[in-house]
Amino acid sequence: MSARLACAAICLVSAVLALGGASSALAADSQAVSPAPTLTRPSSPSKPPPQHLLSAVQATAIAARESKLQDELRKHDHTRHDAFATAPGMWQVSYYAGGKEVAQVIVDERLGRATQVWTGPQVAWQMARGSRAPLAGR
Image (cartoon, rainbow, N blue to C red; front, side, top):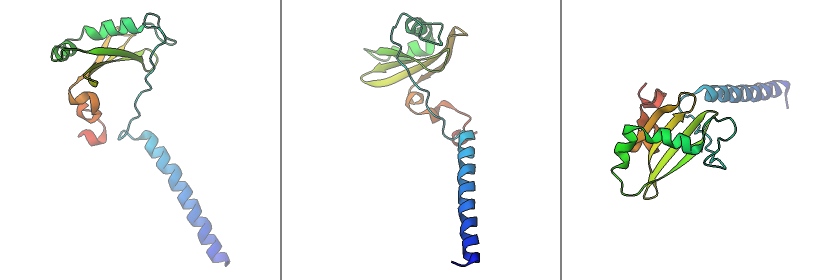
């Protein structure tokens, strides 16, 4: 292999590696795709899990006070709910009817209130939530 060809190959490999690193860095800052929070079902419904002040029962009671949630639940004969610890101090309480998630409430236990209530298509499709992400009509 000639020195010129070897130099070209090295430049090509360097460019590919540099672009791969740049795209990874850009992807980390992108708002186009945000990872879903890790949902953890607590081992006890009545005891706060690590990094939490409230139990699942207490987070669910806070979620249940939301009028938007109450309006949605009146539309269904039978519902069930699950509370999940997400980030430290945060809960997601999901409500199901007929095997489908029909409402989702995000509770910030430090504030002692729900910060987000999602119903209808907003539950399953985050783009319907009016996000400021690029694909949501920023």
